[in-house]
Amino acid sequence: MLGKFEHVKMKCSRFKGTTMDVFLDRKEYDGNIFVQLENAEKFIKNYISLSSEIKGLQREDQYEIPIEAIRESIVNAIVHRDYSNDGRDIKIGIYDNLVNVVSPGGFPSTITQEDILEGRSEIRNKVIARVFKELNYIEQWGSGIRRIKSSCKARGLKEPEIIEKGDFVDVNLYRRLIAREEHTSKLPISSEYEELIVEYLKSSQNKITTKEAQVILGLGERRSREVLKVLLDKGVLERVGRTTNTHYCLKL
Image (tube, rainbow, N blue to C red; front, side, top):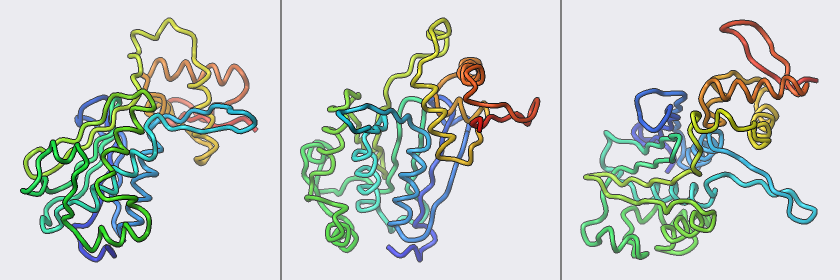
C-alpha cells in the first residue's frame, strides 16, 4: 500500500490505433497505491474526449467513458491483483476504440467468470480491501462490476468486458465510436473537435502539436490539421515555429 515494493507499479500507455504496435505516450507510476490511482485516472482523462452540456444554468462536463467506470476498474485491479507475482504490474492501455486495464492474477479458484459478472466477490487482499472500504473507495462488496456495466450502459456505450486470460484479468471499457477519417473527410468540422482543442490548451501549458491533436481528437493527420486550420482562421489559435518545430497556442 505504501509503495515500498519495486513491483507495485502501474504502467500507462497511449497507443496509435487499435493495436500495441506504436506508442504515442507512456508513463510509469510508483509510490503509494492511492497516488498511483489518481495518476492513472489523470492519464486516462488526458486521452479520452470531454464534452460539455448545458443543463439549466449549469454546465456539465462529461468524459466519453464514465469516470465512475474508469475509477472502479482501477480500484478493482489494485484490490484484487496478485501481489505475489513480482514480475507483473497493473497495465493500462488506451486505444482508439477502448481503454484496457490488465490486472495480474486470475479469478480465485472458488468462483467463475459468471459468478464475477453476477456480482459475487471473493477478496484476495483482505487488508487492502478493508482500507479501501473504510476510505469509501469501495461502496459495497461485489457491486463494482455492476456499477462499471450500468454506468457505461446509461451512457449508450458498448457493454464493458471482464475477461480472465490465463493468470491475469482484462477489463475493456469501450469508447464512443469515432468514424474513420475516410468517412468524415467531406463532412464539416464539428464544433466539438474545436472545443476539445481549446479545452486541452487551457488545461495544459497552452501548446499543442499536430500529433497531440490527432490523439485528442481520434482523427488522422490531415483531418486534425483541418481542425487546427479552422481555429487559426477564426483567430482562436496562432501558429508558432515552422516545419518540424511547429506548434499551436491560444491567441492572446
